[in-house]
Image (cartoon, rainbow, N blue to C red):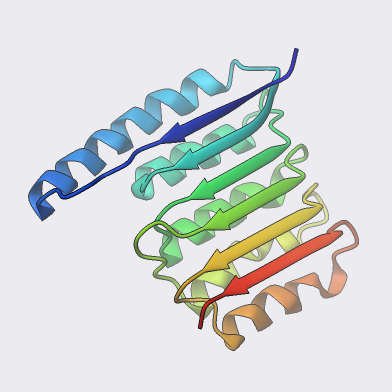
Amino acid sequence: MRVSCGVTLNVWDLSDEEEEKLYSLAEDGMIHLMKLLIQQKDLLELGISANIGRLGFTELANLLTHSESNIPSLKLCSELCNESAAILGTALATNKTLKKIQLSHRGRFEHGVEGWRGFSECLRSPLSALEELHIGSSSSLTFDCMREVLMALSRNRLLKRLWLNSSN
C-alpha cells in the first residue's frame, strides 16, 4: 500500500528568539525524519511545510539521492535561499523517481537568479525524472528568475507541466 506523509510546523506570535529556537529544533527533527523516511518504500508523496534551514535541505537532498528512495511527489513550503535552492537542484538532477515537485515559500523566499540557476540543474540533467514543476512565490520570481528556469528547459524532454506563479 502506498501512503502520503506530511510535516507541518506552524509558528504564531513567537518572539524572534523563540522562533529561532523552534527552527533549530525543526532542523534537528528534519535530520532524524529524513533518515527514517529512507526506509519507507511505499511513500506516494512527501509534504513539508516548515522552514527547515540549510541542514534540513541537506538531509532532504540525502533522502532524494539515496538509492533506496522512491518518492514520486514532493510538496515543499519553506524559506529558500540561493544555497538551499542549489542543494535541492543538485539532488533532483540525479533523482530518478521524483516526478512532481511543488515549491512555495514560507516566510522568506530569498533567492534570485543565482538560486534559480542552481535549482535549474535538475531541469538540465538527462538523469532527472521530473515531469511536473510548480513554483509559487510572492517575491523572488522575477522575469530574470523565470528566464533561468525556461533556459534550463531548452534540452529537457521530460517536463510536461510547468506552473510559474508570482504575485510580483
